Image 1: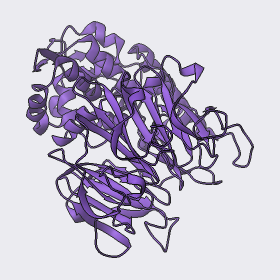
Image 2: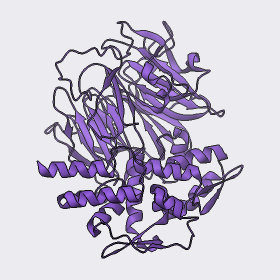
Image 3: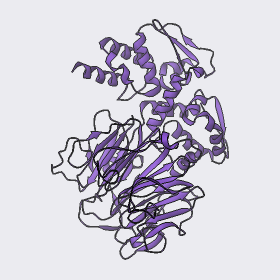
Image 4: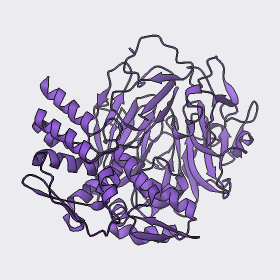
Length: 568
């Protein structure tokens, strides 16, 4: 299944490539949007300022107002966050870039370098935007921010505007805010919750409506693990993972938007009983509306509907949850991701790349496993080389210690994520972050990055393929996972077979492109100028001979696209 997007609400900065900004279309109910051919969506974030789409290759597309979409001039982007008047993007190197009047007054339309991990000697692992502020979390648990400080939402006594990152709090493992939030929540490493900023209508859940000009502890926190908190203009929604594994929703703030129904304003987090028999897996909040997605393939909305952001097709607010039915997604909705813009809403599907799909199937089949990992109540099998490059060798012991605390089912969830699965419960993901296994959720990019490192490490390669004039050293693990031919050839990773003696039907250059593709799912741009008709035919031969089980866009379609562009 390819990337898929549904949108509704305000028609500004939406991913509608064949719709002109001034063209009238019905966006009062979910609208199925087309995307560019072959494009894989990894992440979408939206606010009033812009919508930012990150592709699985680490590129970012900015859609803003009536402008044509624009690719940001940065590579290896893993995450974005958008507020009302700014946005930020995070790269795999721990760099942060931002755009907007609260990033730079002088050049609001120019992308600015916000955080340099080299000069600061610290990488950023997560970012989140509020209405006019950008928050950043370092690998050492330090929370920084810049932008508007009008309600002291940056926890600083200084000016109402801060132009360079200022330290907000130490010992933080997660920052929460929202695209229309004048405040933020900070979850510490010992699971205490703090907040600062605007508190109109009790949005901070501290049993008060006074703005918090200093960091304040939130004492009224439900039992369980906090997975997410998102704040709108006058309400906040919290997702708690209970000990029984169920995700439950809590709310505080203004009655019209908090989901509790009329006249039910609350200044502390109260459970929305409507969902007590559901397992909620995702939440998101816009300015005045909320999206709730359950494991049972149900999407619920509530709040203001001024721009059709609820998707009900009729005007008027909904003070209690209302189910939105999209017949085409009735049995697969839980595989989608929700995104609430300021005044619009998105559902999008991020498919696994061919590489991730192959690795995931490799894990599920249990073929070629050469390591056993112990869980709290059993064992699971895996592949040393995959773990080595996905986790980095120094983290293997930390990872094993984490699995010892988990059930076999939970360990399998984690392993699926490592092998390229799209979904992982937030509490499990946060625990992986704590042992510094991962820094973000752009899994396709992470897997590609890990496999690229693997391809460059000759010391662990254990197989040789001979072509016309060269010997190519590769990993059996990769050949086994990606090629039906080699799956039939290998009995185990330790099998004595270590070379194919005769494969001279394609050129050395084509085979080099092919091998690099097996590891990364991409054709390195450095080869683009060398792909001609002969190289293309050789790549077709290699794909057929090694029996790659791929869906488009695959090696052949990508090579064909490059060749066609060269002919223009």
